[in-house]
Image 1 (cartoon, each protein chain N blue to C red):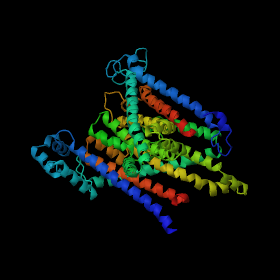
Image 2 (image 1 turned 60 degrees about the vertical axis):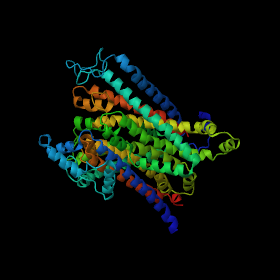
Image 3 (image 1 turned 135 degrees about the horizontal axis):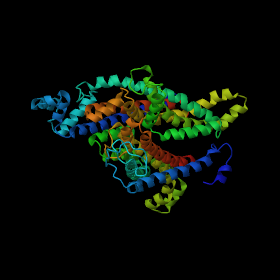
Image 4 (image 1 turned 180 degrees about the vertical axis):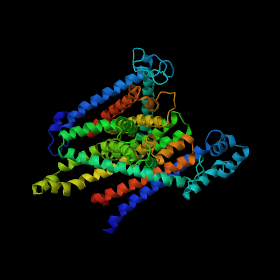
Length: 283
Length: 318
């Protein structure tokens, strides 16, 4: 989007004259935050060089120093190594659950809009029934099947995310499929694959980008929330929520310890929110 | 007129009714398989939970097995399970042996109190600030609330809860940190939930309001000589209310998920707290009861939001 076309709109139509520039700034801030967190998750475990579960009981609640840049926790484990492993786990979950919700969700959305009829009706009813259950409750139900495992979190989140992609893609595709350019492309004999790639995807991709960053943030938060209340990933696996609840009792002695997972979680969610919001406000 | 007035309402009720039915079937079926998949011999586990590990005998386990129908083939048991649900019989807790319905009826009151306080508080904060920001887009209030809302939304409810506990209870000592013994105990969990809700509704209200203020009919209201106050009350509020109320429906997810986590954090004796404890103990009937009540509550609240939107916006009725 270029700023010149924005300012040439009549005054009544440009609803957000000033924030447009602010959004540009915030988007790069968000992207920078995400790159930082991803780099930390990717290289942190190797760089820290220590085992995230190795205890050193003579050196517990140590303040940050050269050997342990973030100090050690109540069992003398390296906070840097634990935080890096936790970040990796969170980002993996976000990536996996978003990817496996996006593909079937978007495909089914296009199919429903294209075919209509019973395909559409059945898929809408299924989507509606999943929508009646807040995502976290579905994850909690599945988490009971295998306490402490990774797969119920992943499955539960994917199952609740695909509905969003399905609904957005279906609604938008309905409008797009009725447009003159797609009608002529069909009359010219282009196949469905060409139309999806050439006409639907470019219009859908920005909206899906926004949704993806929101559901990635939801995934990261859900895992931390479950770990925090003790029904998610279990200790000693380093996980952000588990670390928070473990370190909360030591707040008086070592407040920097609990600040580390809270800070990392907040930065990740903030980065995802900033990257996502920009596109949704440009439509 | 009558037919036009009734049919959209019936449409909403029908769609939401079907949704409630489907979600109940989904939760019931998942809970059934959960029950079958409990590791070890479920009868022994349940007997141990009830009578204590020292008092379990083969006879006690056998009694539990017969009582809960754990010896039937799975498809018969599933049909039995559904039939029980259809009669609104939620069964008894595997841990305490109490009737689930009684326990939940008691806990639901606490949960509703917390959710209601949070909702009321967030509506006082969010839309009011949003309207102030929307009246002057790009002004000081707009920029401050944008920053505040963005930062606030990056904190999930439980982290915000920890920060408020540390700030308001531990350091300043203003409020009790957890429990529900005192009248002020509800303040901290409700405030935590309300701040998260307000961060969302404030921006929605702001966008809705700046759109209304910039619309031709608003300008016309001003031109024909209405005062700022009159044009705001007559043309501004109702039009801006439609997206705000519709957004309430989306916020229900946030409220329900927030209630589950925050009740646990603040030891608030509601169904969210009960659900987490039931998952801990793998008390499947209790899990099923809590999730069902939450899901049906969610559908009911969404129905109310749909009906409120119909009442506010006459265009949706045609």
